[in-house]
Image 1: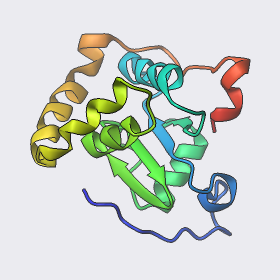
Image 2 (image 1 turned 90 degrees about the vertical axis):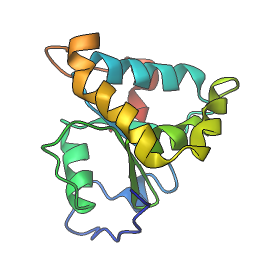
Image 3 (image 1 turned 135 degrees about the vertical axis):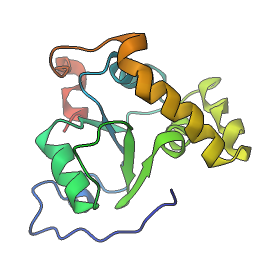
Image 4 (image 1 turned 60 degrees about the horizontal axis):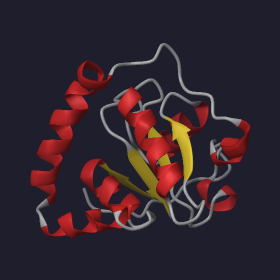
Length: 152
């Protein structure tokens, strides 16, 4: 999926992206998925600076953002990265996030030469089996105080 430049009506949405988090990527993730929560922890530990914001897809903030961007929020089979009123998903989201990571993790960028369709086949396989492979939580994570301000 290509970046879609979308306008968000700031009056009708409780979480306007442009005013609260201008140019800051927001990672929307499945809050009950152990793999997804592990990915959030990984990003927090390895990012160059604390730019990325997070929200579980189950949260009111994510629901509002996804609705504003024309995405079906009932489907929780991918993670999304929202930046500058554009939305990335699946492998494109992961490749985009890798730009914010310290070395050697930023080298994931080398996979950009592979077709997105191929990368998404791998992504979809892992996504469809994530609960079976990695398990599922009973409820969404609660971030600790030190990173609370990074969660919507």
